[in-house]
Length: 382
Ligand code: ADP
Image 1 (cartoon, rainbow, N blue to C red):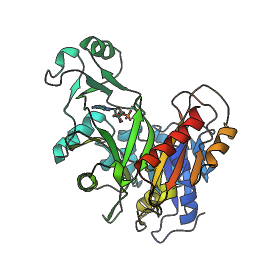
Image 2 (cartoon, protein in one colour; image 1 turned 180 degrees about the vertical axis):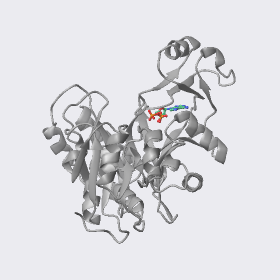
Image 3 (tube, rainbow, N blue to C red; image 1 turned 30 degrees about the horizontal axis):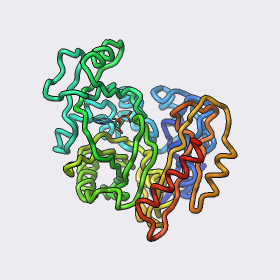
């Protein structure tokens, strides 16, 4: 058994065993914690760092009950859970961090937008919709249609340019939909925000996150990319953490419009792709911070240890079983580069296979950061 931390928590259950849970591995070791992971397949990335495995889907609450028997606290790396079934466990005394009431408004994209509206946080105009005839005419086209649940990396998000396109998607069976205005944003920002059990908060620097085809391609952690709105974003982050009475790390994604308005797009109740750079560029990584928060340890410093950072996702570009060892070697040869490979058995177009963070030195500016990202992508995508 792991030694207890000063908070009395030694064993952390993690629902979900993908790369996010895998990247908690080193921090868990450092903090003297054991990770117990619930995930469907032995081939999933986090099985390498798990002291114990419960092989089951993430929404299998009976499996979570088994996990709970081995853990002091249970957290999430994947929010596609069965909340009502977990609530039964919470009522029986199982400790979840973040607590279930904090993730309840987040799991459904319509509920999320309603939550922002209720606390006065700016968000795109939206409505629940099941027929094209219900569309709010004020939105105009294009509009954005999103599956209310289980969307990720753009799966479940459709930008519709015409009513015909919208009607075609709405006719697909089995999903409930959120419709929202298309925001012609100037850029997308993100911030990782942490709140401890006793209510203390710590924010990481605001970053720019760039998506292509609705999937994150790269993240720039450098003030120049943030458009002078860091203060606005930080105020929103504090407001959300407080309103949710949150415990753990939370990823917040935002739109910045041409006239300097900041709107929240979505939040993720867990560590997040836009915080991967913290592994190499921050005093405390988002993974360590999350474990600290959920086990009741004091939060660590979010200060950067270098002048800035560029994080580039390595997305699959073909169906293959290759481990791309040679390309990874070339990437590792870039000065100040840190290459992470998630060890997935198969590559598919768009799948997140790994990422590279390059730490910036004092004096390196926006154009140099962009050149670094281009260099990484030229090696990876050819
Ligand atoms: P997912 O949960 O699949 O990541 P998101 O809501 O974050 O879905 O959408 C993915 C991407 O699609 C966003 O990062 C953004 O680039 C684009 N997008 C989403 N909603 C809007 C919107 N209302 N207006 C413009 N672009 C949007």
